[in-house]
Amino acid sequence: MTDKITEKCVKYDYITVAGTSEYFNLWRQTKSIAQDILEGYPLPPGTQMADPKFAREYREEQRRLMRTTYDFGNKMMFLAQGVRALREYGAVGNFRTFIYFTTGYTKLQRQEAEKAAAKYASPDRIFPISTVGELITLINDATFPGETCERKIKRIDLFCHGLPKKLEFGYKGDMKDKQRLEKKQARKLDPARFELPHKLKADIFSWACQTGNDDENNWGGLAPTLAKHTQTRVHAYARRTLYSKSFHTGGKSESEAGLVRLDDGKENIVIWHPDGALGGVTEGNTPASAPSGRRVFE
Image 1 (spheres, helix red, strand yellow):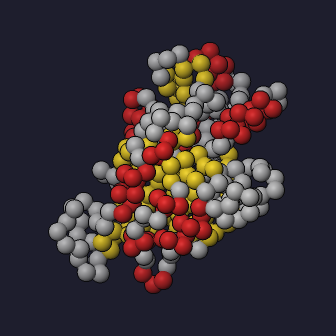
Image 2: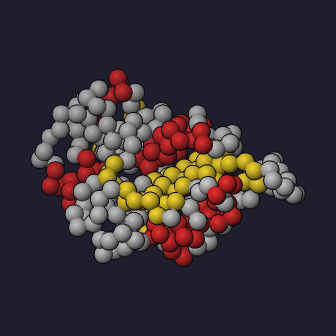
Image 3: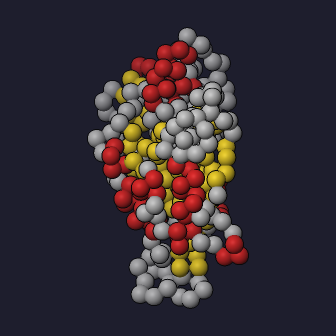
């Protein structure tokens, strides 16, 4: 941290945030199943929804329906999307920051995620954290280390589980209460970090389920609160989001697509790509009564 912020000197940050969950039984495969998947036996897209409750029901319904392309279930989907976002959107900032929640990931999984993120993040801008409090502190930092210019944020992309009115960065985990972002936590963000010149607005993209849902399947929920407090444009869905494109190879084999297998030492294998997700997050069709599309709240 510097002693003094230089007047009218501003540098911009791009941030991507990846959540975690210890509720991984839907996208953790035993070695034998993972081997079958890598040899061409696909899992249904419901195994990569950002809403585990619905994913369990959907998976049971869809298990009988086989697909002709690879569609891998995997617990690394949030990390993979975070790396992809750095790659795709990081150029908007002078600095590119990767923040991820660590609980539930093995040492090897964390190493591989940080190795991938380091290709696109700025030096010393990878932050493993455990709580939403740490996330808020990082977002609210007024300067970059060693810099005298004021720090402003141009864009944040959020990848995690979601429920109406909540971002669940640690769904079902032992620290879930400290890894949940609701309206109370959103109001702790410093609006000054998002104040851009020339009346421009910063952007916050939530790729979690139902950030724009008021819990009655109308537009609302956490998104408008976040937009009003930070004076940003918040892009969010009222419906559930799908992460099934994260490692979807489009019909290529795993080797052709560059996928690798990470053994967690417990008779399980997760699938990873050294450059992060292959495809982006898409919108699902549930709840059917909720409005479709991505809305901008400001």
